[in-house]
Length: 337
Ligand code: NAD
Image 1 (cartoon, rainbow, N blue to C red):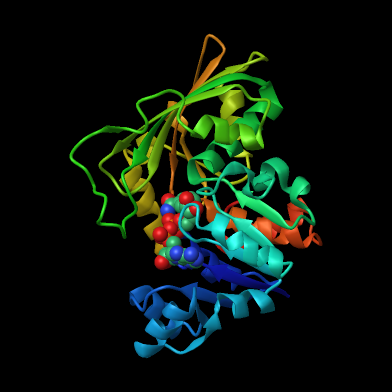
Image 2 (cartoon, helix red, strand yellow):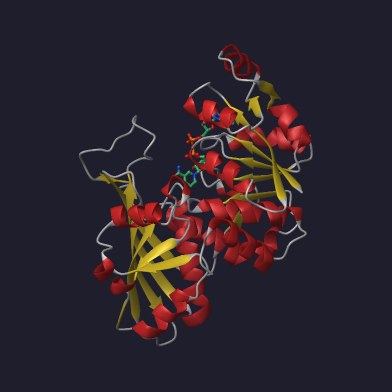
């Protein structure tokens, strides 16, 4: 059993901790918390072992009646792999502890690209992560784009991808940033960081991205315009997307008019926290005009990197192949294969 520590129990860390427990080959060493909020109480009620991120947190949690096992160093010491789900760029502080204790670690997309020496999306480059000490699971938007572009590139050759991203303003649990009564250029310059991030996984795909924030917390929405080297047709593109791992197709005619309907589908499916792990593409939007593929894709920012983190853990341990890992992860999360 791979003993997994989750450092940072926020939007991403909570999901990873729960899903680690669904894996037949993993157990949860524990999680870290800074404050004794409802998330700490929820972890406590689930019976998770809780550690403070430092001595101050340990005392604050303990004073609030939460049984604390120790501090981050104690947790990391007993783990085989650490998933660092701390806030953006905090991982670059935490990495020295993982190095000091010679532990393997999975970082998240908010870290600099070079933190781990490899940016990871399971279906694109699982094998390159086998046995490594560190890997960085890329951001939600990059994960969604890499799945689709990698598949289209393998089937038709992608000569150019242009992507316009309408980003959710913030996550549902964050009232400090919005929603905002405005459309905010994010950034006003071109390209946004997403294209270069895609190239950290798929270096050979020319891509330009532009992004802005819209007043929603549900999902991101991407408009993709992709030139292919080989001639293709709408039917061939749809058939390719239908057999692409972790991609789900939905139909506008079937009632999927907006991102809200996709979150509603997750409720209907009984998914935990209404999570959608797949890149969701509107079948109706898929068009081929003058050898360019057009489509709309939605990304559930809170959930899409969950399966990638689980596969990244197995890749670092180095004892499980790509198909076996992805199949196990998909099965435990209810992702159709
Ligand atoms: P979050 O703010 O929801 O959670 C981070 C948690 O870490 C909080 O509970 C915070 O109290 C705790 N923390 C603070 N300092 C810490 C430290 N030094 N060590 C350990 N924990 C600490 O953040 P999040 O949205 O879960 O993001 C985590 C990472 O995942 C970031 O790199 C982010 O860019 C990336 N990511 C986020 C999303 C998203 O949509 N939220 C999507 C994909 C990737």
